[in-house]
Length: 78
Image 1 (cartoon, one colour):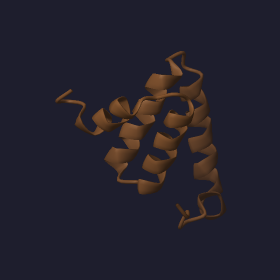
Image 2 (tube, rainbow, N blue to C red):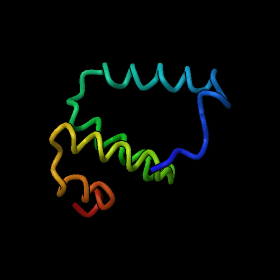
Image 3 (cartoon, one colour):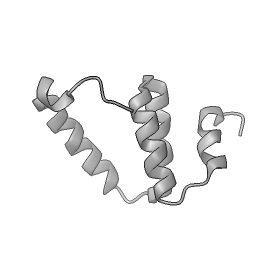
Image 4 (cartoon, rainbow, N blue to C red):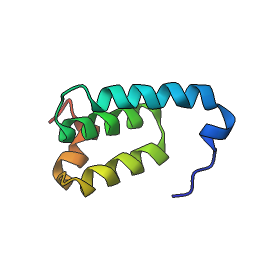
């Protein structure tokens, strides 16, 4: 998927803050598999297809199952 906006070029200070937040989240102590699902759900809520694709790809790379990835969208029912 091609990124349509160059975030770091357009808003470097915001992206610096986003990177710092992401680093803090990654270091918070939660298991990596749960962090992938949280990031995927946040991307769904934000309506960012680029991020949904990125986080689902990263989760698969790290061994997440297809079933758990599919169920993120229906987490209340599952």
